[in-house]
Length: 224
Ligand code: ADP
Ligand code: ADP
Image (cartoon, rainbow, N blue to C red; front, top):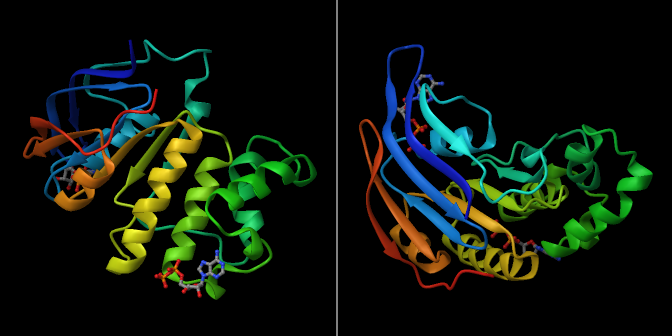
């Protein structure tokens, strides 16, 4: 069964904008799905709905393949802008999601170290965000999303602000990470290259209101 299933979802914002109408998407465990489409077609709205940060106006979002009641704890969200806390060290930034769940820094220590190792930043635990390059800051933000060991990683144009070299490196890091963690990824981008390179499936969206107009296979196999 699908890990998460969106059925006939409509999202109308309070200002009257219909961001999505009759939107359907099944995300299967282990796949890397890209949502590809122009700005404003509703890609971020889809991620926010899956994460429970917004509610659908109509339609349903169900978790047929999720185990346990609190599936939201199993979601990691990587935003377009890394939004790290500038006054906190890299380690403390990665600790944040655990801290919000009441996990002490002492108990979080192994998880923080593990997450930083996954993104290649073990030597930078004590550094501050301002001391890091844009690519490194994005990797901290990915480590932060991984600290909860999510089954589902939602990424909203995470590499859009980076130069191409940083972007290519992070694309490869992300593929390695998914292979190691065997997590499911929903990745939002407006780069055709990125979607084809990273994904097992590309859902092409068009607006407005946003919906999926075509689906194609990407270059990757789904992790099972
Ligand atoms: P994308 O991620 O594809 O750029 P979004 O999901 O951010 O698209 O937005 C889809 C549409 O919904 C856009 O027209 C946007 O202006 C509108 N929108 C998004 N969030 C809100 C909001 N909180 N209030 C009102 N309109 C919004
Ligand atoms: P960007 O492309 O945004 O500058 P990168 O992540 O490619 O960001 O890193 C830029 C530079 O930062 C690298 O060339 C390297 O000198 C240093 N750096 C990045 N990650 C590490 C790391 N894990 N260990 C040591 N140095 C690093």
